[in-house]
Length: 146
View 1: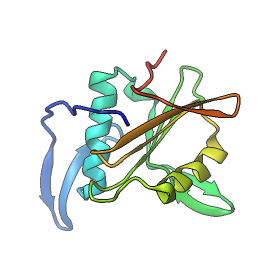
View 2: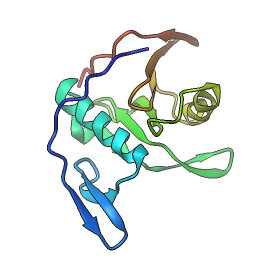
View 3: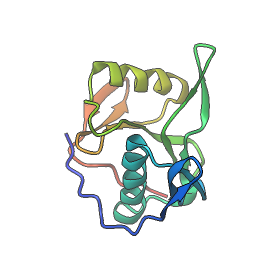
């Protein structure tokens, strides 16, 4: 497991007709502030501000076809050649990271085939690198070579 210390950040949160919303600086729009979105936004800030992953190479909640079903991944970080580099699955803080969570991420991974993937609920964070078909659990997030 990787320990992440989310940096203090001045999130733009406001009330809307549908409830509380938060400004997603990657998607450049307000989105519903759910517990999972809170994890996603803190993780995005961590990736960009602490790890220096380029914001322009990050994609959030895009549609993906898995076994002819429409799904949405949480976060994909691309490399400088715009190839998927890291797939990230976010869960609400009270949802434990389990084998079921891993299986969901692996279904997306089969489609994207990137060298890294991560699971996070904001409290538990697991990251792995895949090389030659072998999964290597990491103790820190990889450095992005943009």
